[in-house]
Image (cartoon, rainbow, N blue to C red):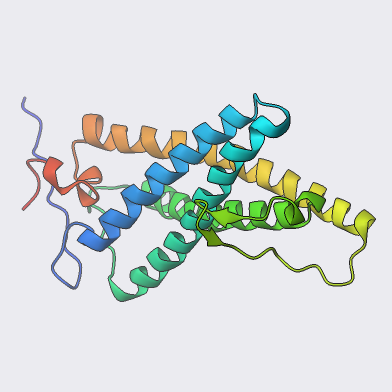
Length: 205
């Protein structure tokens, strides 16, 4: 008995079965920047003293860039509707896909915002202000009326939040990649092709 060919994905109201070029560029650019920032975080975590300053500065610059790109990506999502998921997907798979996308948006905003808030509460911010890629000054989050003890508390809270979100990102990325591989190699549908049109399967129209 031969396996049935996978059903073709339905198309969105704009006739697309894949994401728009702009959405695809946003996706892969943000993904690459997040991967770079994870590597930087692991790297400067092994350093001490002044050696941390340079890689931390790049880490902050990439984080703010991810924040700005994520805001632009969210705005674009309101302009360009995403393509629908394949009709062959089960209800729980659709729920999982939508939940993971929501979590990713929370992480793409929450990680840079918590990091920005954390470094802004540090007394070192006056000595080592945030300058994006050494060229564009970036303001610190204002904390009017807060003394050193209160700022220390803010820094600890934001640091813990940043760390929790980072571990959540690791888990979410692993699940996301595993799910994409499953759809491509086991289900043989066009889930991955929505973001990588060149790998559209036999079920594609």
